[in-house]
Image 1: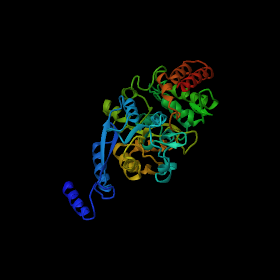
Image 2: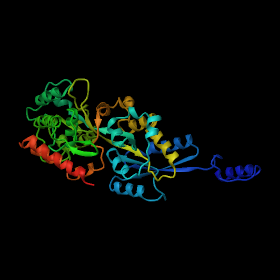
Image 3: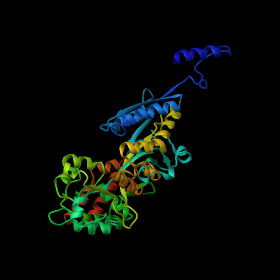
Length: 417
């Protein structure tokens, strides 16, 4: 049918002096190739988006290719570095990965679009900030996920606890009340540094700071030390291992098998808990990580994804249209409802209000943060001095001394180029 229509157009155009695939004729279609990550969106969502987008954009076809997370960094970098063949025009990347791709001029600067049309000032900071390199916006927030407190309602009832805590001080008191009679008030592994980061940010501290183009570790600041002290006090109200992180062993399994009142995890962890212990179905509740003051959740690490456009794309306009649609209010809220994510703007949080765990996550996401926005941060995590620092403090070493040592190691890693 398309060929027949094209022929008719050519015949008509020949009467006016010639025919071709004229840009304004409406017959030339462009394909936008989109790389999205495995499990980020359901196939039903992707099919529906593709169908409706193509109907609303008659000159564009969307080719969505699902990628696996394993080895994706090298694959994305190769796509950014090579000449155009059949490469992607839009790529989903982890929010903390944007700067490493932007550093080599591999991404399209989307600052003007984000400021003019996409409401950049309203984005969740934990997605927007790591999407910037310098003053330019390269990563456009797509969806977010962050930790909440998952708790056992039955153990709360047994301890006479009728409501979640309103502040961090309340949280400590409540957890101590729960830590009796053979129960653990909380299971918090000693090297859960993402949770620690939230406590540090809540105190006004940072993992590292940039000044005059130079990054330095700042775990030894007074604010960061207060965050570590809160972690120490909370972690002591349970039997979490001091020399391992939350995945060694996986805390979902530990929680499912033991009489543990609370863990800090993403809401989706509840599915694994109930699968292992079906008796807990209906007994799990959620609340945002408490902050220092009532009525405001605590700062948390925000994970999630941004969408980027390679600088070498040959379908810039189409790529921008796809990004605008996927990150716009309509499809962003559809994705959040479908996948139990947090939408990219706090104003869209009502879309997930009916899901208790996701609603708690969305409340915390409003104060979400991400790791320092520098391509070298990956070198810090590769040989993570924060984990060793936490274990040292939890086993009785002087916090100030260990914080200074860890801060120096972070500074050294960030200076590596």
